[in-house]
Amino acid sequence: EADIYQTPRYLVIGTGKKITLECSQTMGHDKMYWYQQDPGMELHLIHYSYGVNSTEKGDLSSESTVSRIRTEHFPLTLESARPSHTSQYLCASSEWGAGVATEQFFGPGTRLTVL
Amino acid sequence: ILNVEQSPQSLHVQEGDSTNFTCSFPSSNFYALHWYRWETAKSPEALFVMTLNGDEKKKGRISATLNTKEGYSYLYIKGSQPEDSATYLCAFFYSGTYKYIFGTGTRLKVLA
Image 1 (tube, rainbow over the protein chains, first blue to last red):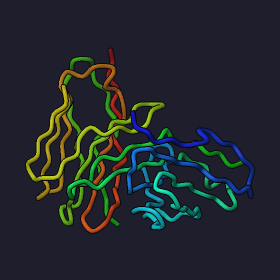
Image 2: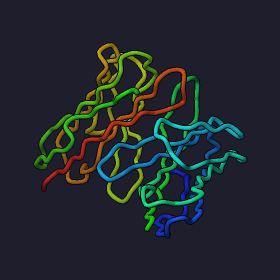
Image 3: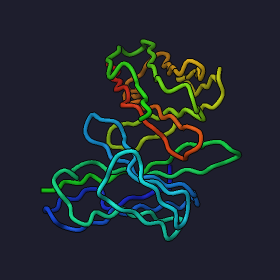
Image 4: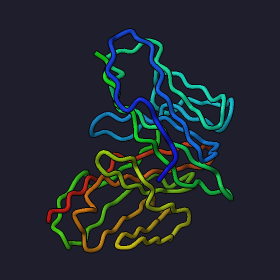
């Protein structure tokens, strides 16, 4: 079982609230990712990190921000939630071993509903 | 924008049937192709990591092949069982980045 955790698992909030989705992994992986998935759609990369103090935006435009102050922790923040942010958010991590892109390990996801 | 396509989008098979799915990806800048199984109420789990043209991987009744020159991978399930019911995702990892591009997945339902 993968050692990657996300909290909360479910969240219902009102428009305009600031929220932080937590993601932690205990595998010591350098690479961490945030994906957004709407029902029936593919996983879209919204943020990723090569390591501590490095973050990049993904291919899907997102109003969220991330930080990577510690290897194990990669939180995602929405400063002002809107109904369009309603989605499932998945966190993942991987390592780079011998020049090979090893498998990603996924957290259980956070299902966010913004009213 | 790079595109990864999977087909079919969904299918239903009878228990014991064999089935296969396709993942199509850009043939340039290839680095790796991953297959994941995503069961309802669980997280995606890796099935295979494939890196070389002609790669064939096998895990029990599930196997996969890779053709990087023409940009496709096949996933095969032999003798499908109800517990194989899941969404199967492929992810393309292209050189020069640390990013994965996922396909929309194939939703498999195995009927007992």
